[in-house]
Image (cartoon, rainbow, N blue to C red; front, side):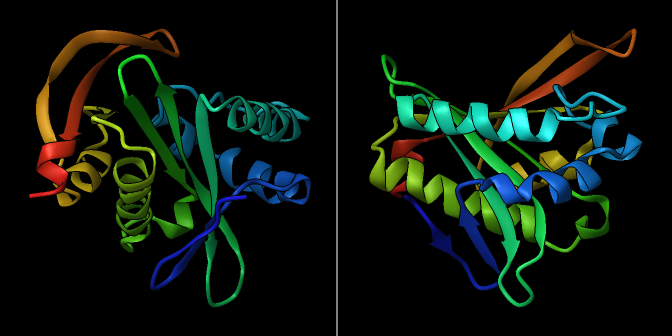
Length: 178
């Protein structure tokens, strides 16, 4: 079981008991509207199914998903995950936070620790992440962690009947260890 600590966060695998808090935070129009894959309204039972599926993926070695926990009061705040492509030693990073935790540096701090895990423990060559261009806060998290803008895929995702432009960022192993 991989658990990480930062100055303000605990990053740990999801537990079945996280489902209720996860559902409360993720079932928010503003959270869902700025992410690629979160539906709104979030379906009943969806949090438990998400937790169970992510545990399977973690065991398969094709991904890692961490619950973001406030170190001070042990409050669930959101999630950071990586989907691993072992053939290419590459991962795609994704994250979200409950709205009340936005703009406080939590995502930046959590992403920094997950990037460290990806390069130092998993020996990945490249980690990529994507954000809707209408979500500059997410792009800011990537930039603050040294990720390089690779380009925008125009009208790349269909979210709620609107084609969204997606900005892609990456960090290479050689850049991380500079």
